[in-house]
Image 1 (cartoon, rainbow, N blue to C red):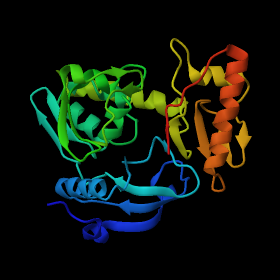
Image 2 (image 1 turned 90 degrees about the vertical axis):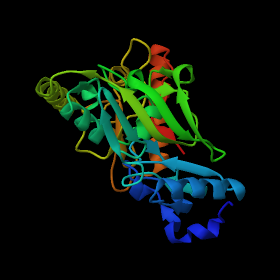
Image 3 (image 1 turned 180 degrees about the horizontal axis):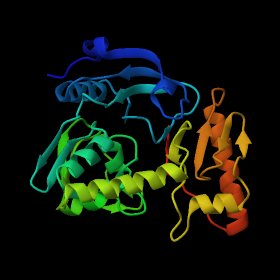
Length: 293
């Protein structure tokens, strides 16, 4: 028997500000904002939304998300720890819940002497978001290690994606389901101390080149094939370009940083200006890496 949406009023926050839940600290309010605390509650809630024909959006840490100004209609469900936050290491395999912090999974795999994820150090967000967006860096992407993904579909069904059902490309993949419940990653044994050293070196390099102390959402644009989006933007002379209280970082041109008075419209306008400038100078069409709601 499917629950009614009224059965979830204890985890409902109507008209919830989404700005407080995203790294850019921007965006409008969610018409219906839910914070389930267990897998069963999450699945029951999704099925209740499906039965009531209420559209559903799911997010985790909001580290790669630009929410537009105005009302976000339907139901917004947040998946963060303790929900789906378990991490299990068995042999050379790590299985992590979709709500687990990617940083926690990286540190647990390194501690267990398993190589592959150490280069993902410093990437914010959850495992679910990382798998959907094939998060990665100069040295590796998470997709190359993913062997199984358990999902909840837009119809509220639980399914597994394995083998040929999994395809990952640069900062993208073919997981288009509503949410990732868990992901199973196959890594390779290595010395834990060596991995720790490698991870620290990568972290120091990122910290020296990225505006990690500022309010941002990581890289705004995907790197065009064989090129650096940040370098293209910088060569257009756009470092420190501002619209309202949003500006291109003077430390890394592929980061937009926001101040207390910034709006989502400021960021969208800044994005449009950058895309036009790069297209005019280099004939390159930049594609967004962040998601927009």
